Image (cartoon, rainbow, N blue to C red; front, side, top):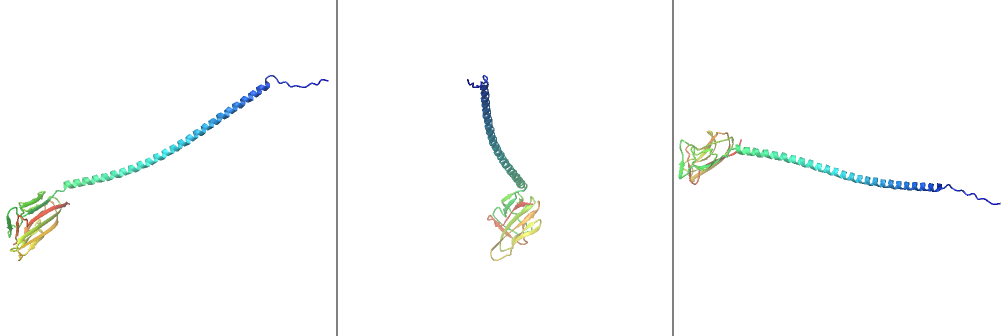
Length: 237
């Protein structure tokens, strides 16, 4: 009896087509995975770039804040400097104003401008100093012997007297007819006598100062300048 073997015969193209579809699907999946991996790397790279950019931006912000602080500091220093300069300008203006406002006053004189003289005793006791060493401001009048204050202020005065022992030697510094200071020497056996004195007087504009002899006194002077009178403005008031 002949034996029969059952043989399964596939339909033409069925198995091949299924393998082909699976292979293509696998390739598509592999391509998709590669694309996703590439995209992931791009994203990671972009994230890294963003982090680096953020760090640079943060560093820039820090630098800008540092520069702002420095600018604020410089601005404050500039304001302080402007304040000091303004104050200095004010002081300079004050000095300029005071320099212009305050007259320059100084004089120095002696009794005779030639030869020699014995002055006194006499009724007109005001000493008129004729020899002018200096007279800045022309406040001293060499015709009257009187100094007239041109402005309110403190004035320094000094005078010297010299004479021989035949008479009292001395004189008085007078302000507005009021005695202030003096020199005085009695007649003596020493041949000659000299004296000097100084004072700082507060004067108003128009006040008058001069030197006059004591009663029965006498002074001497020649070109050596023994008997002198000087004064100057210390500062205005």
